Image (cartoon, rainbow, N blue to C red; front, side, top):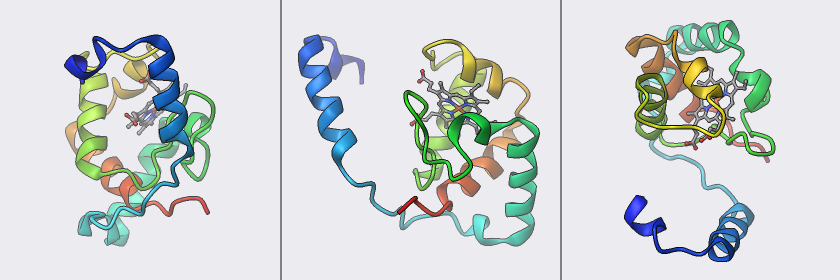
Length: 123
Ligand code: HEC
């Protein structure tokens, strides 16, 4: 993304952000089959509760203010972002996600990514 963003003016970024924010999210048709297994869903729900994911991202994972919607995003994308926050490869606004991702094991990340990808999008 850096090469695409490097020459952009602030006003152009604001216009693009407004444009994409106004788009209705599409359902993720590739939600991982893993996520449909009740044991995997239950395990992921427990991890999400343990680390208060919904307290910032909202109980339906629709997000709020600058905190991203997670419901229905691609599971590979979600897992990559979580590993990136944990390993310091993806910087975040205020370090919140870097700390939230610290305790997550690779297995936790896989479970969470599949769980969130399969989450129903808010209507
Ligand atoms: C204290 C608030 C807070 C908590 C708790 C929290 N998050 Fe976040 N999350 C954020 C913020 C703020 C961002 C935006 C980070 C940025 O890019 O600057 C974010 C971004 C993300 C992203 C990236 C989304 C994208 O579109 O790239 C993922 C994935 C994510 N969070 C998952 C989680 C999971 C899973 C948990 C629980 C383990 C969690 N978050 C807990 C505040 C929080």
